[in-house]
Amino acid sequence: MARLNRSIPLGRRRWFAFALLLLLAGCQPQTPEAVLEDYLIRVARVVGAAAETPEPEPLVRYPDRRTLTVAIPQRTIDVAEFIELHGCDMGALVGFRNSPLGRLQSPSQRLGYEAAWLAAVDGCGADADAWLSELRDAKHTVLPALFWNATFAADEMRSALGLAARPAGNDFADLLRGLNDRLTALDSGEFDLDGFERLLGTLRAGSWAGPARRDWSRWRGYLDAVAEVLDAAAPRICLNRQPTPRSRLLNNVFVLFYVDVIQPELAVGMREHEAWIAELQRLSERLEAVQPDAWRAWFDAVLAPEQPASEWRRTQVSVLNHARAWQEIFAHCGIEPGAAVGQH
Image 1 (tube, rainbow, N blue to C red):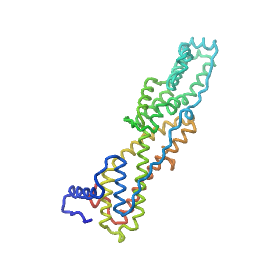
Image 2 (cartoon, rainbow, N blue to C red):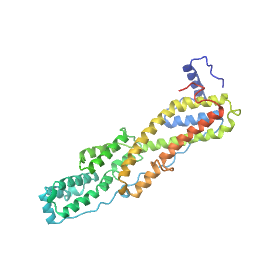
Image 3 (cartoon, rainbow, N blue to C red):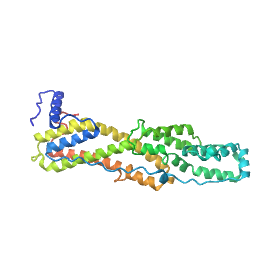
Image 4 (cartoon, rainbow, N blue to C red):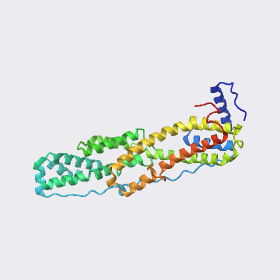
């Protein structure tokens, strides 16, 4: 390939380089996977290697409700205790809990009931008998488990973290910060059930983790494949450690397809995913005492930043390894990234 004439303005040189690359493999693809596949094909074609489309790996499913639900101990009261609760203006509250509707409460409603019970019993003040104080302490102890059942074990979080194809549109990190705020309010006796359930309703609207994990799988597959092609071709490129027509063309592919097209989307996605994973981990760690083993196993396999085998950590490593492969090619050929088509 002839070198681009430096007397031509930079913008026009970039357009000519782009046009030449399009002639190598047809029109620019549209879907995210097609863009990545085209990128791999172009890199492989320049270095004279075969490009094998990576197979998507199977994704671990979110645990079922049965394995995530935490058992809540039940406490019964006798007639005399029930009468005493009436003296604290709690009779109606306890009566509803034992009604047919009260027995069918959703996990979030059960959490709201216990929060209301604790707020009401605090109004009894020093007049409360010892048994009522003991019951209050016991109910306060199970609040984390109730919050867990209303979030991580409930259908709303299952939708948000499941593999559903429909992506959700809200800021997942912000929604998870909202859950962290609700947990703080629960600890301080200022829990708002209506606001909590509105937040859960938003979580049910779609999936954040499912689309993100499919993106990660694509990124890992294609970026690893490009890195493998580059590593294998390195000994044959720039034998005299000087730029060659092939190395310049390879650099054009890097800039015009990775830097200009793929990397911006990748960077935005990685930042967004890192933010919501951090918020989810913070919420999970605050409830660590009640976490079931099924949750720990799923989080370690999928999201844990500190676990080398997790999907998220392997994605981060793939991005770094891909960058390392390009850096080594550029260093071997004595060229600065982007030099063939101008600096970014």
